[in-house]
Length: 204
Ligand code: HEM
View (spheres, rainbow, N blue to C red):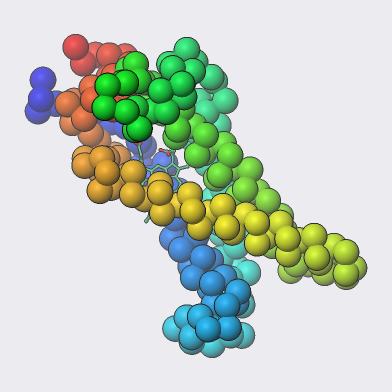
């Protein structure tokens, strides 16, 4: 059983994940350069302020399109709230206790569903829409102020959530990164992290 590999993501899911992640990193870094005078040097790496602004705008378009496309991969699953999700949430995923263990989970656990729906989708749409407002509809002062507020608020949410997502997908849970590189996981990993999904895939 241990040697068996299970397919967790399709090539398309992985490709879109890396478009989203790479565009996010470019936007995050150029955004940091615009936000703080002391970090403006970051944008010299992107060819100076003028080019960095163009890269930020077009990178934002790539991010927004990729974001919409994620809906085909995760939306239906993320909005279907199950009994396992309730238990995962009430035990806080077991992260803060030595004794409490959440029950076997489906392909995505409640934490992943919330990360997708709240952070990626809601704040992703907010940061994209406010970015487009600043790019194309920057005529009234009220609108500009509102768009800046929404853009910066979403930026702060991402600045906390994405490093946590990266940590949980790599160092904290060895064997997880390959979900987004090769698309396959070991049967042992599947049993440990997504037991219900592993059972559905025929692992006993
Ligand atoms: C270089 C940084 C990143 C790494 C190493 C990484 C890694 C991963 C891995 C390994 C998974 C699969 C987790 C599993 O199935 O158990 C995943 C899923 C996902 N990632 Fe990333 N990711 C990165 C950046 C991002 C960014 C920037 C976003 C969004 C802005 C993002 C959005 C998602 C979403 C929506 C999922 C599916 C839901 C979930 O599993 O949480 N990722 N990522």
